[in-house]
Amino acid sequence: MTIIRADQLVKIYDSQSGKIHALDGLDIEIPEGATALLGPNGSGKSTLIKIILGLLKPTSGSVRLFEDRANTAKQARNLIGYMPETPSIITKVNAVKYVRHFGILSGLSFTRAMQRTHEVLDYVGLGDRYREIDGYSTGMKQRLLFAQALVHDPELIILDEPTTGLSPEGREEMLELIREIHEEYDKSIMFSTHILQDVEAITNYTVLLNKGKTLFQGTSEEVAGLYPDVVIVEPDVEIERTAGILAEQYQTNIIGNQVHITVNDGMQAPTMTQVASLLQPAGIGVLSVQRRSPNLEDLFLNRIEKDINQ
Ligand SMILES: Nc1ncnc2c1ncn2[C@@H]1O[C@H](COP(=O)(O)OP(=O)(O)OP(=O)(O)O)[C@@H](O)[C@H]1O
Ligand SMILES: [Mg+2]
Figure 1 (cartoon, rainbow, N blue to C red):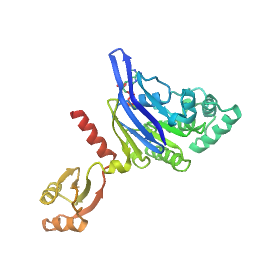
Figure 2 (cartoon, rainbow, N blue to C red):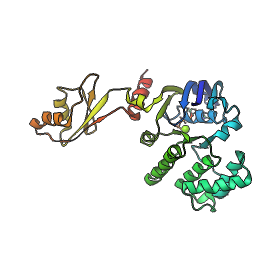
Figure 3 (tube, rainbow, N blue to C red):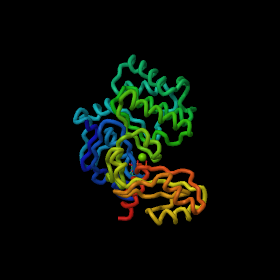
Figure 4 (cartoon, helix red, strand yellow):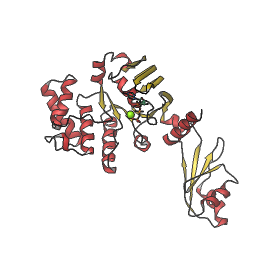
């Protein structure tokens, strides 16, 4: 099922410095599952999310949600949970009141909202829930925002930069919660981020925006098939000399302290033994040889750079 479909979306903001085309004829079609929403700063990710949620009206174009099961902003909010980018948190209330408030806003009765509030705060591991939000750490605030997005048991959870500003452990924990809500509770998620590793392991569909347009959308398998695989060789010393020797037989690039061999169509990927036997006569040892398919970083760099150079 297609859960989000946008056709020719345009959003023009009027600002003091003139008109800003935040979305410039954007088309997307997102299936159920876990989607990464990627793009450089200012590419329109947050604007798109706000239009999906009915918080902003597009200048032109249309959005269809859940194949027309959500025709009004209210219906959309019942089916979608939203974890915002910048926490516009009311600071003088405690976590229970805060989450309960969102539960009631999305149509739950007081009793049900109260019950769900404790369930979701337990789920995200927020124990200290009767203290004012004011004094919460960034990690606690992010957990609270996640709980608020889940309180009404939505089918789709949209997370705008959920791991920004977290410590490494906090980030891991947040990612684990997101993964679990998708894999174990079977919810669809859409996740915008700048940290590509954060979405790589969780999502199976990618939308890449630039300058308010869709540069790419497709499955992880489609991403993996976009460019040739590479075999990554890590020598013990002398990267330049290693690359020089391998370049006699292969197409190579030096990336950091590794040599990347491009595995073009119809070519056998070199094995550890083959690479070692080429380098051994020169006295170069090999630490590792690994084959890798294109990932989101390759997609991001290739497509965004191409778009900038056009
Ligand atoms: N309320 C607003 N008024 C005027 N311009 C805006 C407004 N909100 C966003 N913009 C502009 O619209 C463009 C898209 O912004 P948006 O916040 O959607 O991008 P983003 O992809 O979420 O960026 P980031 O990665 O920095 O969060 C940017 O040029 C931004 O400056
Ligand atoms: Mg944003």
